[in-house]
Image (cartoon, rainbow, N blue to C red; front, top):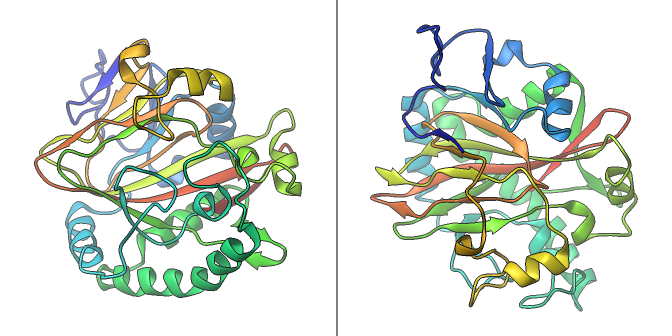
Length: 303
């Protein structure tokens, strides 16, 4: 297991190799890189398993990340995931909630048309609210992330039926909360969508991106297992009382445990099993989004 919980990069004979190293360095499947060192080949390496994670240290300066987190936590429009028993807090809407029936494995909700309508109606308003809140410290962090994607390839917000999705979800994990091991894949939420069919082709896939604004004093690490499980296997591994996540006691040790620093941007393959360790001593605040990458190199992002 690769453990990156010390706040520095992996151990190396080169003592200049730390999280703050300029340029790009890779060790044990974790790549640390400055924004201008990121290439589309890094995206492909994440999809194809050659990289476990891509970390851009201090993508948002630490002081700015803290001030943005404080402002976001004042937004009153917090909500819990409608289709999960766990009371995980967020600001913004998720496509997952709009199409997945609460408490079931049916991936299209019985009120799917109405739920999708609400998702799109709220998307523009939530994008504006979050951007306006974040801009007190300069460019909104999520806007910076999308500009990075556009600098390395064909990147745009995902559109469904010519309507732009919401992207840039704020997730707030409070003391004692965790995110159980799970997999995220657009094709399970909207299996007949043309974009889902594109993502199912060889060479395509889905990444997760997180900009970390605040970390607790302990816990909150990103954990990654470099394997996927079928829906039937995931149901068999499901934790008691959970409607989405696996029981850690039934899993092997993770392949990587990564403790982000405030301001870091981390990309990884969302189709492999991943989760978040229990938060202790403060809140964990992050900006979360997905990137669908097609076989011909298009990148489309959403939350």
